[in-house]
Image 1 (spheres, rainbow, N blue to C red):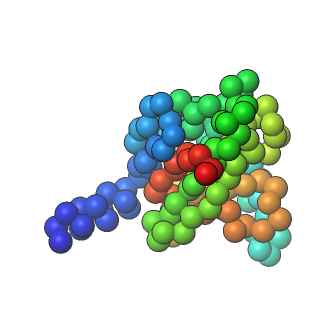
Image 2 (cartoon, rainbow, N blue to C red):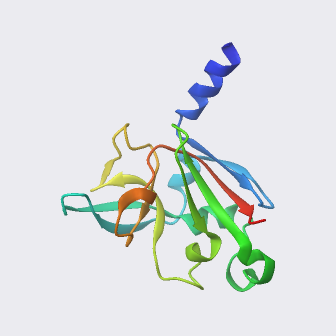
Length: 152
């Protein structure tokens, strides 16, 4: 029971497990995240209000773990997908290709701020933002893990 409590506490911290089919799985801490190149994206909420999110491209986070991207993303590597999971178990899926700038101009980020303020605790400390999805279903809140898998 104590181990479970410690595990749950670890999940609510500001660190994300980045793993799966990566050559260098790692734990992304807030300190490491703050050192990565940042981008901004705008996204409308349900009542059409524009918000500005800031964070790191999901592809940059995966590249740090040794993900197959760019010119190496071909053949069997095109069957890879990314699963992002939230603290409540909610999951969303992206193909690896849709995150790669060689394949798409879409900006999909792991955000930590909204309108230059930290995300609310109900949304963060990290949230995925998909800039141009028509519905916010893949803008997953309270992210705890990101992993790459091969489609079977």
